[in-house]
Length: 254
Image 1: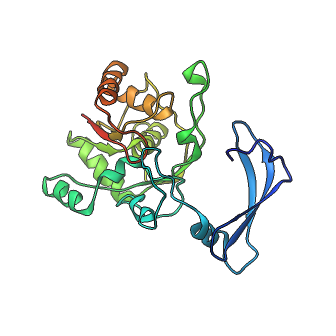
Image 2: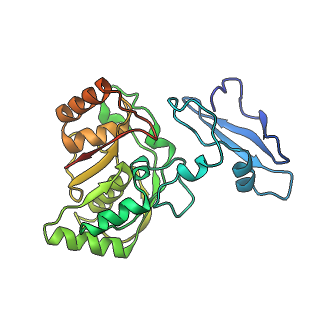
């Protein structure tokens, strides 16, 4: 909760808009860096989920100088989005449209899908002095059997496995790490923190956005491509006015 310094346990808040929906909240516990445990409820027939949808706003990056509109709810979803659960869109996927995917498939690229529900930990700054002391919060994933079969077939034949985004990368590498280098279908959680020195077992190409400094995301990219190469790319991006954040520019690391 930002700003929320005065909202101690027991404090109550009400969220409302110009409509009839109201969402009530009570602070249950206070944690570090502005975080709270909050109980939410409604006093109408609407569920908490329905109230959030009615009252909530899509978080636009600071370089988009306007208020959010209804269309943003569709635009802030990837073409791969199926299940509700992420707190934000996995931004690399925002660069694809159905038409682009068709062109990709027409070039002989096999596209498979998996799910990782993006959590708060993805955006949590690295505040520790020694990077290995940083901890990510667990995020839920689902790796379907058809995806496993396709990826393992590609690996066995020496073909490249290109991950769309850091979330896909983290899921594949976490499952491989837990199973001796092999992918196994299933659901679970992962708190794998990838930083320079990590040995990638599955992913051999990565499409990813430009991420913020001191984030776990840029450390994953540096682990994959090498710190010097990534810093050079970022310097060039800044010099040419590339955009960061959710709707920012992307790079393909091969």
